[in-house]
Length: 474
Image 1 (cartoon, rainbow, N blue to C red):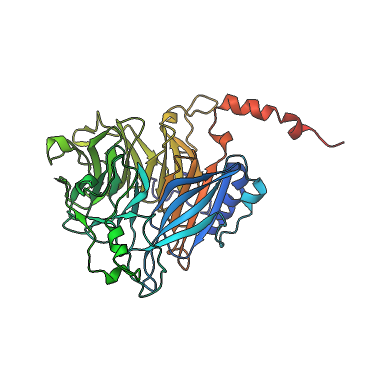
Image 2 (tube, rainbow, N blue to C red; image 1 turned 30 degrees about the horizontal axis):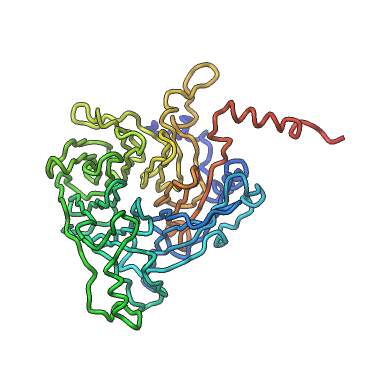
């Protein structure tokens, strides 16, 4: 908290440096692209996307790979809301030229991103999650109590025009008593789905309860939707008087006193999971012990909690993000002190509510955070307490643990996803409606490897080019 009459720097307000405008910040960031990024693709969206997820690898080539990408289109009602399946060409490390990545047009649509299929979604797509064992099977949240399951490969593509028939989900998960809009997670060990909603409940399903859903081995989704499609010669599923099959909840868990905003499974146990909500609580659950919380942090933050993630490399570490602009790192072996949350560390690097946190799938200490301030920060929690200046004192210029700051979005970053196939590559989306005429921005980017590789290794490589840098033409 700064003192009254002082700016963020601690100087008197009259001496504080003027705040840069959005355009000035963006211009400053753009000038640094060739230095900071190995590759960057910018894709202007007609409609905002509230969620983005990587799908399966489709093809490997010498200089690039092709991969599925899942997005949503949140429209104004003039055309239907859609779930978009796109094909993305991901340029491999150290292939893109600096001139290329620095000369993109933020107003244009990237040639690397091509729409493959459109599913007309019944309502806005608030959240997308994929099954780890079969990333062609998606779960979506909309403004309803149900979770919708889609086999995106077998679903027919639809033209998003007013009056077009809505696509039918392959399976519907029921159990919420009120709208469940954002909290959604998939288990990495079993075909389990977890959800939270406005009814203050955490709800658990097992897809195996629909006997035809997963074939043995879990490699192929067998939706009842195939029967729906074959029953209609016109391809219009709304002409078929057959509802999508549904599955009831395996478990319903009560412990929150306000809306549940996010949920996550423990990476090493299908029975353990956690949830966060607008009651400022972080709750840990275990389906083997009943429907009551195993552990409850009453004040994990000083405001609503928006997001949570469980470290896939260390089952004891849990991240939370909040409307108080902070990210907290908890160790589940020591969650509270005196009834209040006792985080291992509080990461302060955003100026607005944190909307999404996610651990890197490839680096145990690295995670990202996205917020309403338009920033996507990359952190290294192992660097906390180790960043020092030359005189031995801790540096105060940047927040502790802050490793990299992606400032390519002009408005709130609503979602991002690490690419598990291509380490250090991230897709992120922003909702630009409040700062422009509308729409959103999709960016796919990879940090320059000189920034994260071991310092000794980088210096050895740079030394090979010493003569190119220091020599002068005769």
